[in-house]
Image 1: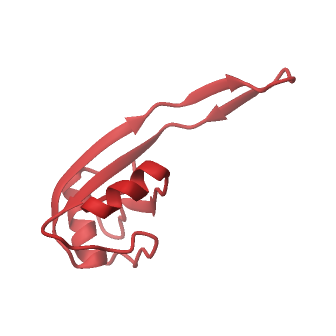
Image 2 (image 1 turned 60 degrees about the horizontal axis):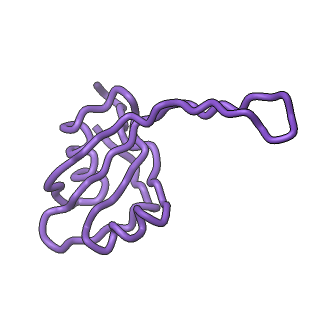
Image 3 (image 1 turned 180 degrees about the vertical axis):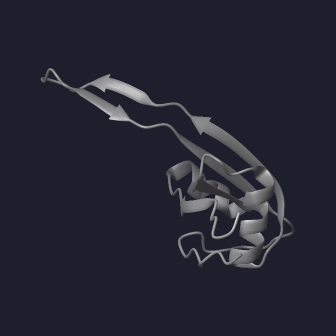
Length: 100
């Protein structure tokens, strides 16, 4: 797949920020991306090897807005938690272009 970039953006929450101190980084990824694709993209973008890649699909969420007769819809997405080999660190907010 030429021009395919599995990583869309970094997810920065309280939990993901705490996990960055131990070498775990969380990314929003393409739903078609596999663990191998994500591992290769981390290697090409940041120049570090990934020890493990864990993926999960977050289901869509529908809720009623307070005081209104309206529905708020949040789409489903796929996220990946990447653990780096050794004590390497990266800056997840700076995603370089994925060249293939």
